[in-house]
Length: 149
Image 1 (cartoon, rainbow, N blue to C red):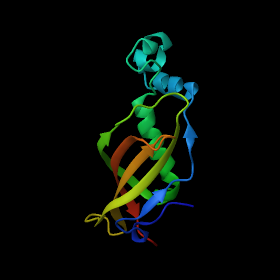
Image 2: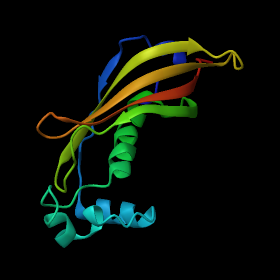
Image 3: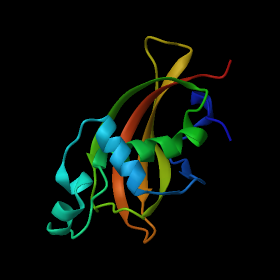
Image 4: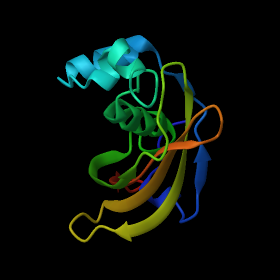
């Protein structure tokens, strides 16, 4: 399935994204390294083991990026003009190596673009759930989408 045009969305539309992803040590280490994040909780097994979590925590910015990435195929693939912002980002539960994550999306607002008659603004609420069904990440994403040609 490809992304939908602005005209195809309705408030309350909900998607359970089909792709799930198990987070690996390589994912976490590469992302932390690429983003110059030296947090020992993410990259030092001994420091993480001595923490209250007792194990390595997955980098939160990876968790957020994965959540958005898992949603793209069914929301904005091929119809996105621009992401306008991300708001109310929360991470209510930690993510650990080996967790399998899945994303859901709900449309929470629609607004015609004042400056671009060929596009509209969709606000998505994205959630990322672990294998136990716990929400590990949530945010609002505001996207400018093309209208149907």
